[in-house]
Image (cartoon, rainbow, N blue to C red; front, side, top):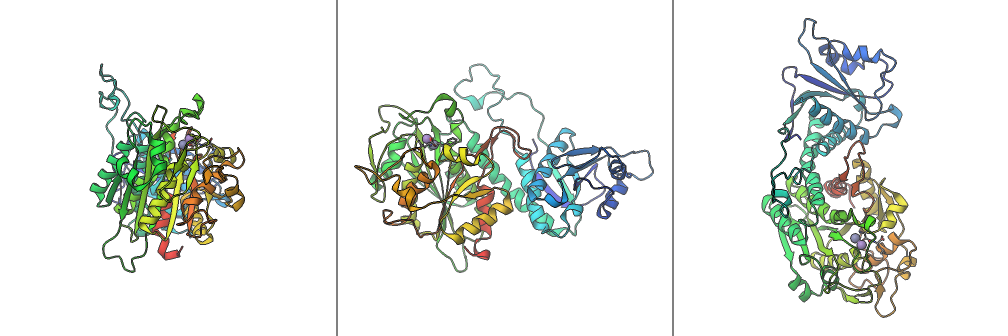
Amino acid sequence: MYRQLMVRPVTAPPAAAAVLLFSKTSAVPPAYAPIDRLAGGALAAALARTEFSASRGSVSVLYPDQSGAAKGFERLFVLGVGDVDKFTLEGVRIAAAKLLRAAWTSKVTSVRLDVAAIAGDADLEAVGRALGDGLAIANFEFDAFKGTAAPGSAGSASSGKKAASPAPLDFTIELDPSQKQLRAGIERSLTLGDSVNLARTLAATPPNVANPQYLAAKARAIAKETGLKCRVIEASEAAKLGMGGLLAVGGAGSAPPVMITLEHKPKGLKNAKAPVMVVGKAVTFDTGGYSIKPADSMDRMKYDKCGGCAVLAIMHAVATLDLPIHVVGVVPSAENMISERAYRPGDIVRFFNGVTSEITNTDAEGRVILADALSWGITTYKPRAVVDMATLTGGVVVALGSACAGAFCPDPDLRSHLFDAADDTGERLWHLPLWDEYRQLIKGTHGDIVNAGTREASPCQGAAFLSYFIEPDGREGIPTLPWAHLDIAGVADVKGDTGLFPKGPTGFGVRLLVRALETWDAKGA
Ligand code: BES
Ligand code: MN
Ligand code: ZN
């Protein structure tokens, strides 16, 4: 695919131009008249045809008549964003992704882009961010494990000889120099896109390679590259600290479990405040353990590390964008396997904060490693707010499908802040309840709580379990520290092309949380 995405001011007419258009546009919008002139009136001709409609997600490639006098564009990409009265920035993201794919197909390496007809008086920087999102998301291909033609390369799946694929091309967007905000938005999202794609690459890496130690090594590499501070708590130290949950889940793993932390503390930050903490579940493979999953529920369980991969990528982004905010990322990572070292149903586990849980189901493992991550992280870093992301329950997929993540957030300010960021980024959230009734569902008999109660309200039970690890004495009630739990089980990967994403991991949460972090102190939360 493309290697580097760039933005620069318009130079001489490039070989191609692209415009974004509302569907049912009947005549060339005045803003596009200059471009259409250089396209020999191709847009006007297309719009005159009744069958032409720039429907949402459509790409039309127009080939201007080159016989005229003036040298103009060889191609004009017309990208539909749908009806004017149903316009959303998601339409712009999809259009940008389609543009890059179409450009790739025709080996076009630069286009002059104009969006004036759809931008109207919209915030141009936001339009730019959406364009950059779509371009970056389309600029991703996970092919490290493809085409291992070399014989005997089994066991080192990624080191085999690659099948011949076309060399990646760089791609440049050319903008009118006056469009500074648009350009700033695109450039910000292209930078962020590298982090989104880092999350997707980590998530797609198979479980025979990406075990907890692999993620720890990646975290160290990210820290080295970006200047973040990295600390990895290995199993022996976790035992001394009393992280009984992490050790229980990771007991049978092919590699020992780890607690990974990355910290971004900008130098010279005025009014340095307590950090915002982001926590992500990284179960590198979830067999279910002795409460084993049926085969057809197990096959995508390499994606059970997506919350953690998103947190590593968020930390990568806050460092590369150099956001003026103190952020800590905590990623508990374990592999949920079966062996004589595996934890059992019936075990009672003691967590870092002293709370104990009966293990009623070894497949409810995410909350068990998050319990230590949350209570240890909050004790250690004393954050002003906490957001965790986890592929926690199948129940949230039953309830909400892949349209949004389930969001538990009793604090109204944090909730509205996160929901604004969700609106801005198209990484949608839906508010789910966390009441004391759900905490009652997981009361234990011989331990304080159980890790899985009855089948009722499973996502809410998950959130209720985590609520025991937010305050110093989690037994007391619903926490008051601003905290959000995002159950991303339905959105971490997609099963087929969505227009924006191809089948595979989405990096869900990276764009959402980075938007929340970059606006945190401006809007207050
Ligand atoms: N990783 C799964 C949740 C999941 C399911 C993620 C489907 C993505 C797609 C999690 O560890 C799990 O197994 N949860 C159980 C909890 C139950 C035993 C209380 C579930 O939801 O079935
Ligand atoms: Mn599980
Ligand atoms: Zn899991």
